[in-house]
Length: 127
Image (cartoon, rainbow, N blue to C red; front, side, top):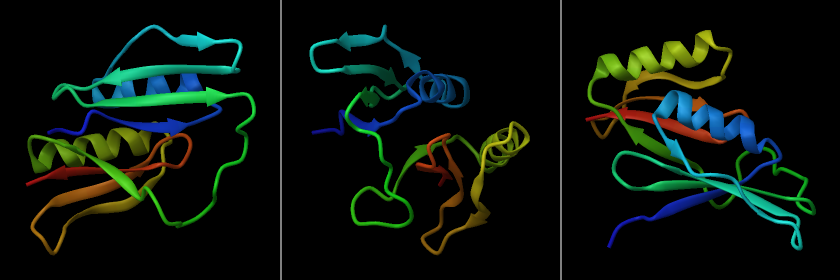
């Protein structure tokens, strides 16, 4: 069994699609639209086959703020410490929030934490 996809609600559909394609090498499908439900989405596929589904619906507007039960973050594995550092600095230089500076975690991962344009946390990890 493998994780097939993670889904995120957003009001910034194209901005999030561009973010994950640009910084994480994702490949996007064409936008799916269901006008009867006020729904549209993109699937972004990554190298290992896992996908991120970005979804927008006209009746979902509010975003929970701060830590909450449920999804905390998701992680992208990178090939080296240098790649973690380089992507962290690229995101920072382009104005994206770095929520956790590069460090070695207690369980041996070299990681940093960045936020996407909606504030979803993404760990950049190497082990």
